[in-house]
Image (tube, rainbow, N blue to C red; front, top):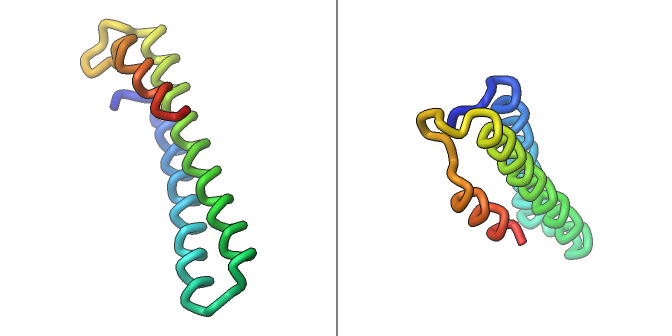
Length: 87
């Protein structure tokens, strides 16, 4: 993956935030919190993962448009597959 360091850090932080939310979900389950509270946190974690994935696709799309001949650049078909996997 050949993306700008700032973009990479943003995506890493988004994934870490989601990981933190998932750790919180595990703790909530272990401490017998209500199902409603657990499901709410699961939804937040799922949204965080979705946003990180969308950001990665957006960054890849921008990179693809800017430098399509760069080593490791994503192809149009690969990008389409990524976008469809988010649907």
